[in-house]
Image (cartoon, rainbow, N blue to C red; front, side, top):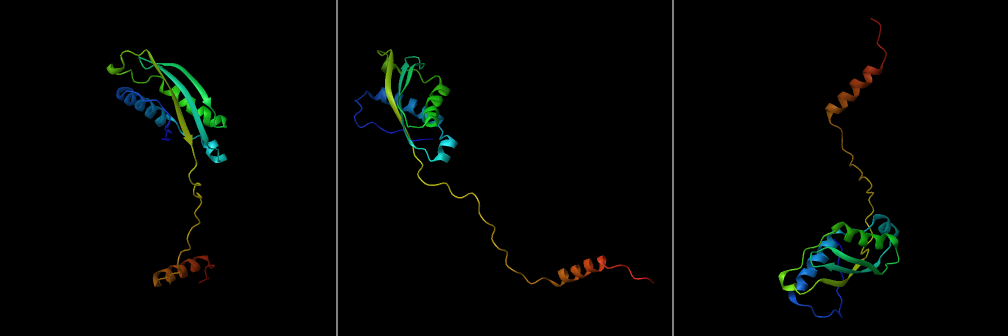
Length: 150
């Protein structure tokens, strides 16, 4: 899940709408994943979309208003919203509204480099063979010798 950035200058909205918007943002955030090729390239940035949702929770409009400068990151956000398709309908406290429009910023950041997936094997300590191992080694050697004539 990727964090959604908060707008410091966002206008005050009633508590019911704030809770509803939080649900919408959470659904989107759960569906956004960092594209592997963008992560491999070290791409990062902020994508901002403008979303308008109708009373029934359907999407009225979706617009990319700020690109991260990487097509894969932009597409990841737009595709995540399209995958959700239907958001929760407005609560009763929002009965007077036909639709709600708001901006959703999503930050893609690579906080730390990925650990090296290759871990070299550790050297096994040398252990003195047991007498049984010595006997077995001698037995194997004896099998490789040609049989003596009797």
